[in-house]
Structures are given as C-alpha cells and as structure tokens.
Amino acid sequence: MIRLALLLLLGRGPALHDLRVESRPPFAGDRRLLATISSNGDGVRDRAIVGFRLSRAATVHLDVVRTDTLRPERPQKTVFSVQRRMLAGARQLVWRPARSIEPRTYLLRLTVDGRVYTNVPGRRAVAPVVRVLGIEAEFPKRSYAPGDQANLRIATDARDLRLQVIQYTSQVGPRGGDFKVAGTAMTAPVRVDWSAHRHRPAPLRFIRAGDWPSGLYFLRLSAQDGRVGYAPFVVRTRTPRARVALVLSTNTWQAYNFWDADGDGWGDSWYVSGKNRSVDLTRPYLDFGVPFRFRDWDLDFIAWLNRTGKRVDFLSDDDVERFGSARELAAAYDLLVFPGHAEYVTERAYDLVARYRDLGGNLMFLAANNFFWKVRRDGQLLSRVRLWRSLGRPEAGLVGVQYVASDYGAHQAGYRVGAAEPWAFAGTGLGAGSVFGRYGIEIDARSAASPPQTRVLATIPDVMGPGRSAEMTYYETPAGAKVFAAGSLNFAASIGEPAVARLVENLWARLSRP
Image (tube, rainbow, N blue to C red):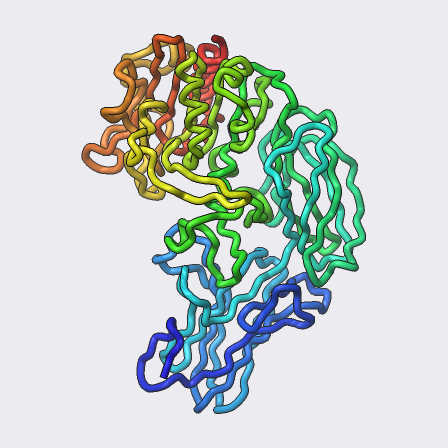
C-alpha cells in the first residue's frame, strides 16, 4: 500500500482519510489542500474548515504553523492549537483567526493519535494550508522612469481600495500592521471600486510616473476594514542627474522573500529548500509588502541621505545592467553606493562594476557578503548558479573583503579602530584603539585575493570564533578608484550614531569625487 510520503507512522495504518480544507466562497487558486480566508469580520471567508474522515475514534490535534524562518529545521511558530477526541466518521475542525493575524500562508499540521500529517519543504504537500488574504500587490518591473506606465496586479477581497504613491524619505513610525511610511505623498489618495474582483486577482493600470525625484517609492493600498499593503518600486532617471548612484539590492530582497506562491505552507526561496532553484522577481513581499531586508539594512541609510541632503540617483539591480558599458557607467557616476546586502549578482553586473572600478570608479559597500553568488536571470526568474570565488572570481578582488562567517547575530561586538587612514575617523572622537558600535550577523575579511594595497580601518577580532574576525577596509587603485567595505552586515543600520554618521560623511567626501 502506498502511504503518504510525509506521514510519520507510529503504529498501524492511518486513522485519517479524505483530508481537505475549504472556505466559503472559494478564492481563485483554492484546491483540496489550500483555502483562502480573510479575517476582516465581514462574514465572507472568515474561517477555514478542515474536513476529514476517521476510520476509528482518535484524538486529533491541530496546530496552525507560521513557517517563514531562514532555518526551516528549527521549531516553527505555532499561532493556534486545538485538540479534540473524535468518534469515527466524517469530522471537522475550524480555525477562525483573529483580525490581527498577519496575511500569509499557514501550515495546518494534524496529529492523530501520534501520527503526524505535515508538509516538508521541497516535497509534495499532504497537509492543509490556509492563505490569510490581506492586500497583495506587485509591479511587474522593479523600476520605472518618468512617463512610464506602471501596471499593477492586486489580490484582495476588499470591496474598495484607496491607493496612494509615497516616496520614502525618512524613518518609519511604530511597526505593526501598517508600515507607516513617513514620506512625501506624490499622488492624492485614489478610491478604486474592487467589488467585481473579490474572488480572484486582477490587474490595474494605475501609475504613470511623473517627473518625480529618483528614489524609493511605495504604493500604499488600504481598505476600510483596516487592511493595508505596500508595493515598492524605484523611480530612476532617464539620464543621470547626480554624480552618485545608490544601488538597492533588489535581487537580494527577492531571495529573502518567503512568499509562498505554490501553497505548501513554506516560502518559495532557496533558503527554505534546495529544491527551489529560482525565485520569481514579480512576487509580492511578505510583511505587508515591505521587503524583508529593507528594514534591516536599507531603511536607516536612506533616511540619513534625506536628512543630510545627499543628492543621488537610485538604481535597482536591473538598472545597473541597463548601462551599455562600464565607460558609460563611469561617465555617469563617480561613486556607486551599495547600502544593503548585495549578495546576488549577475555576470553582466559583476563585469560592469569591476570594469567601472578599473576605470577609476569609486565603490562603497555598507553591509557584508557582497557579490557572493552568481545568479542568472531568465525572464522573471532569478536562479542561483555558483559562488563567484568557486568560478575563479573571488569577491575580495573587487570589494576588498569577502564573506567569512555568519551566526544569525548570536555574537556581535564593537569595531576596534586601527592606525590606518586616520582621515576616515576625523571628527568622530575615535582614534586608534577606540571601540564603537555592535556588529556581526554576517562578517567579511580580507583574503589572498584582496588587492595588495587594502588597508584595515577597524577590526572585530574573533567575533565568530578563532580566526573569524570582521574587517572594515579601504583601498585605492593606480587608476584612482577608491573602495570602502564595512565588513559587517548591519553597519548601515547604525548610521544614527554620531560617530558612525561622521565616519560615513568622511568617506562620502572622499569617494564622491573623482
């Protein structure tokens, strides 16, 4: 007898048959083991009904599990549990979540007298999954130039929506169900009647980017029932206007996006399962539509740019590749700044940036683990290929340092200032031997591939064990290029500290000119 692949058998044959989940009415894409609900209290899809047939009396335990962790082997978060002693025959369990539940998919794990029905990443689903529907929206492109038409795909069962474009300019307010972007409204709120699309996703033609400043923007979508969602996009210039470009790590944003498109209860990312070879660049983001890594690495730095009046052109990863050559890129910009986790880079982008450096272009890396993986883009799919260092192009040859270790933030410590390049710490109150900040999560250090002229500005000795130190570095090339690397993943997030802000100001002054 062929048994369910993920049924852990503790005893003789299964006591549960015809497992299914449903909501009323169904939403487009629902099937036997996937149901969509919306916990807004309007009487439509407010509950998930788990049905099954017991071949004999049994104790049935249901756990509703949230599974968006980077470490799927660890225990997942259970948001609801119920246990019942049930007689043989057709039976049901019901989950009616609170209105505050976060929109996403939830895995429904059932235990029947010790037999566990669950889903494992990368394998065929055998347990029910419930999608809690909020307001899901995504743009097909990651950046738009003034005058470009931006179409949108929306999934929600709200009757009407209010849509407004906001440029992100400063830090957010209290976190929670609403990201509360503290920015500049670029459009008035527009009401959209969505009552005809309450049971399936639908496209919407909404935005024609005006002559807006280059920057990071969010389309905010809100409903009268309190639900809210965001869809990020970059506005680029048609021709370069500033001499500095800020490159947002949009490839990494999607690599760490645990949006569950196939409905098995697990995020569709190679971080969840090795069987996921690609990620879809058009997926909406979890966390109400805000990229996972944006809050950690990019948010504070973009706010600092605006507070200090820095003039930059914003680019997505795609926009770097729009340049026809490195000479064109060097003619446009004196400095490329990578504020976030620029881990995933195509061959064309690596070639352009490396040649840009060779031509004298300056680079500033404000996180760690940069230019680590080679990726390939096929349409809207981004696939991970191999580590650049295993392809004979170690990232330290460009960045100055390369990935050494990570421990999810278990060990962090302050940088100790070295004696090299005292100009970098001028006005910070820091001198050789001073310690500042608290850094780690992922760290970089020099390797044999680092340019020989690479100097260490600061070090966190042995932060992740003997020989696993973080190094903040700087080097110059004979062609005049200047390259800074922070060496720790969360460096940019500390820019609110006066000493760190002054350090970055010193670097900016030196690197933003040819």
